[in-house]
Image (cartoon, rainbow, N blue to C red; front, side, top):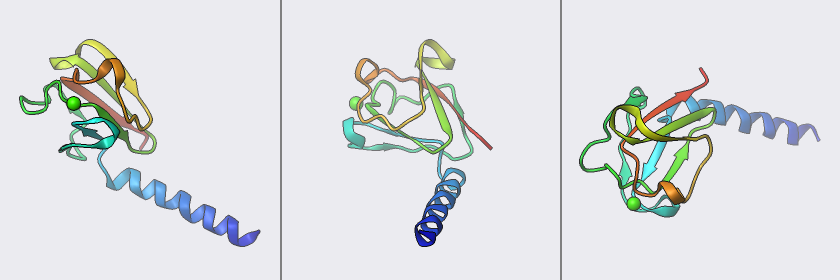
Length: 107
Ligand SMILES: [Ca+2]
């Protein structure tokens, strides 16, 4: 009983550390986190233009714990938007549409 509680606390600590060390989110070219990974700086959470190489290519997203990424259809955070707070292996209607994004995390 006590041992399982300690293991649980350790796991919780690991999640907290990961949320600070990693980027806010990870974008992938294909579904199920496949294909090329879009490089995202851990410090750069507001990206008004994802760039020619990655525009309208993203098909799946991983989101770090306690973070939310808002993705936009067009540049400069315009057009339709979608908030993603959990890992999403297939973006469905949003497949190959993302052009800009803002990512926010709890401190
Ligand atoms: Ca794609």
